[in-house]
Length: 110
Image (tube, rainbow, N blue to C red; front, side, top):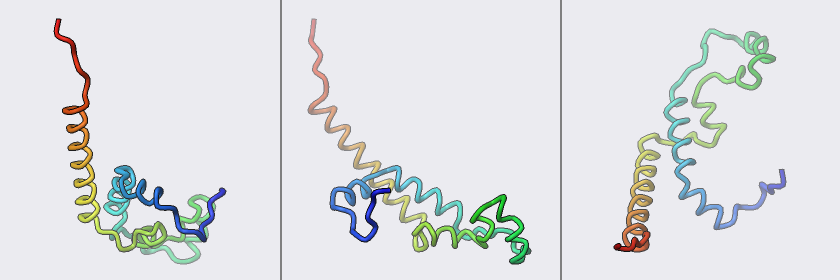
């Protein structure tokens, strides 16, 4: 894919990730959906293998916390993510208002 996973992302990419509302919204959604979820407790190992062709890797997952760990969100907290998303949204609204108030379009009086 052209990405070297051995190197840390550069500073610009870290800032883009930090200020991306899409990133925070997806993390909140995934955390809310999968935290504490269990998938068919009664299936045994052979039942999982039988479902493998139809479901792929999801056939081997036991609960939602495994999914979150695989996505790197094992320690994610929904409330903390929503607070970050709210602060980011408020910041964007303030910057938008400032931009429109001081640099917005100027209309001619006729």
